[in-house]
Amino acid sequence: MDELEYHSTYKDINPTRCVFEKAINSRVCNCSQSARFNLADREGVSCKSNAAQKTCTAILESLRENARFVIQQKSIDGQLPHNAEIRIQNGSVRGLVKILQDDGLDEQDIYGVFQLTLEKYRSIDSFPYSELMQEISAYQVRRARNKKK
Figure 1 (cartoon, rainbow, N blue to C red):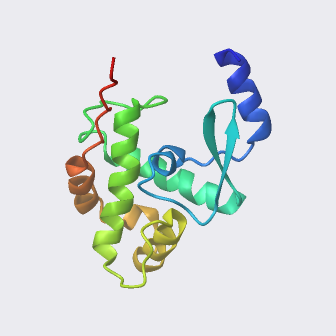
Figure 2 (cartoon, one colour; figure 1 turned 60 degrees about the vertical axis):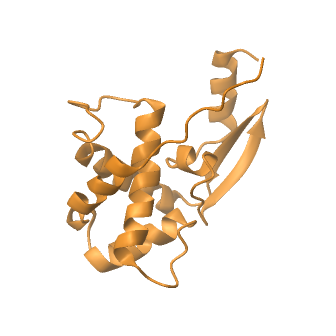
C-alpha cells in the first residue's frame, strides 16, 4: 500500500480522527473517548464523540499557539514536527495532571483531564499556560532505539 492510498483509506475509515493520536500511540496517555484500529501495519486512533473531538481540537490549537516559543516555531501553519507534537501533547496532559493534583484523576484519560481542567478554569483561555509551558519544555521525548545489525 503506497502512502497516498494509505492516507485516502485512513480518512475513509476514520472520519473522526483523534487529535491526540500521537500521545495515545506513544503509550504515555490514553483516552476514554478513543478507539484504536489497525490499517495495514499501522495503528490509528479515532474519537468516539464529535463533542469531545471539538473540545480536544480547540485545546490542542491553544496549546500549540502558546507553545510556539518552547518548540522554537515563529508560527504554526500546519503540521508540526513529530517530536514537537509529542512534547506538546504528552507534556500538556502530564502538566495538567500535576497542576490539578486530584487523587482520583486518571492521567491516562486525556478527555477526563480536559473536562476537570475546564471545570476548574472555566475556559481554555484561562488555562495555566505558564505552568504548562514549563512541563512541555521539560518533557523528554523517548529516543529511538538502536537497531541491531
